[in-house]
Amino acid sequence: MGFFDNLLLNLDASVTGLFGQWNIWTSLLATALVGFLTYQVATRQDPDTHPFLLARQAQGTAVRQPGESPVYRSQAAPHGMLLNAGLNVKDPGASKWSRGRDGDLRDVWRQAVAGVQEPGPTKGAKGRILTVLGAEKIVEHNLDDITRQINLIGQHIADQGGNRVAIYLPNSVELLATLFACAFYNLTAVILPFDQPDDAVISMLRRSATDTVVTAPGSFPFDAVVKNYPSLRQLIWVVDEGSKHMDWNEVPQGTGGSVNVSTWQDIVNDAPLDAGKTLPPLEGQKEPRDVTVFWQSKPGQQEEMVRFTAGNFVSAIAAQIFAIPTSQRMGPSDLFLPADSLANSHTLVLTLAALFSNASVAFNSVASQADDLATATGGIAPTILVATPAALLKLHTESKPALSSFIGSKLHWLQTRSLTQKGMMPAAGGLLSSYYDRTVRPALGTTTTTTTPNKKKLRLIVTAERVGADTPKLSSAVLSDLRALTGARIMYALTAAKVAGAVTQTNFYDYRVFDDKCSHFGPPLTSTEVLFRDTEQYKTSDNISQGEIIVRGPCVAGMEAALGVAGKMREDNTLAYV
Image (tube, rainbow, N blue to C red; front, side, top):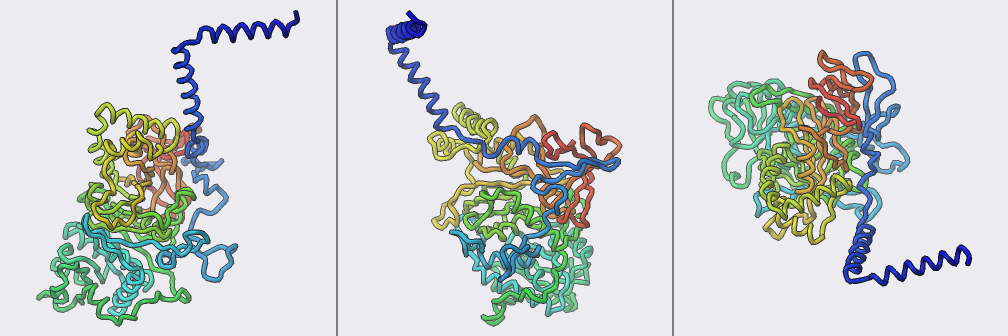
């Protein structure tokens, strides 16, 4: 008998013995094994991004200067190429192969009014601008009406001899319209942090040498300003619906009639209906003037005044648009809510980026003054949210009781495991996911009205650490919990006074968790480059880059700024505090 005959006989005996011992327990085990393998194959998904892209998120120069680290840039803006300096605006009739203009703030509004220009199913689609007045009332503003307000307000200020315009308003359409009015009519915009003490307001007006103020009654200390700041020449009240019947044009006794007082509504309503419907032509216009913002490090301290050029802003806007992967970028299907003050340049840049991307934008005056996201999102369902670290920490703390139950903790563990071990956002719509939504997930973006502007789920939260401002720190573990709780990706940025937008920002798909008290802040954006300068305590060596953080780029006021805090570059080339 040959070798193959013996092999076949042994195989036959083995198979016969196996099935001869087969019983109900064998069937159950076999079924469980086949089911497990089938489930693994059927549900297997690739991570949202390749792990190698997270392992080395920035690149440094091969040569460094004495006392400094290598200069680090985003992988999307390699050394030898220019940093992202503009919006690549294509004028009508220009070849699609030609390089577009860097643009300025005027191009942001022109794009918002024109709608999506790229060919595709969304061509011509425009975002909406909404004002949230509580959970029961949402006002939609016509874009052409806002264009008319921009023209009429800008022309009025210019005709009255205005030059430097202070904007002292909560998050509102009027704040944005005044900013664009300054851009179109060659005025200097000065954005003041809202709800400040009287002496702080007077100090900011004096330091910025403003002659015009656009503000809301009840929040602006008119008598104190007129008494202590005689350079004020013009005041425009933004009056709400309930106060329109009052006479706001009256100048209080003792001012000598030196201040021209008017209301936003009178300026707009008294003009002819056809006036201001068309934006000034692009040809022959001067470059917009600087935008001045105030950076408050800590309560009680004097705010740092920073002047940003138009180039600083458009560079920051372009970098924020580019920071989101192409398939996930903002568009007409998104509803953007800034739940942080627009006086913060980071929040303002993100809002302008949303407008340029033709996303809908909602304004809630309460959102900029409260760390309660449930209140900030009341009445609407945003898909993209800008929130403060304090608000996110409060949300995390308030969600802990729901995670203490046995079922809640296990479901949260499954959600977190998908993020940290599989590298992908948990799938929505399943039985377990639906139960998690009902029992654990906090209520954000819910509404009791039938006129919800957008019923899509929250998909992105952007938050930022403010250098030197004692901002509450967010660890990577807290960020991971918040991703699972909200079902949204979170980008954590590092911001500074002299940088429009952000210095660095975490990757859109970075869900990793480390043993840290404060998460890293990701790599530089495409508009910045970062290096570390030696200090007495922290010095760069061949093995580690650390020292005072220095940032350069077209979005930086003066092109370079020292942040005054020590940082380091981690092994994955993301920036973190030392």
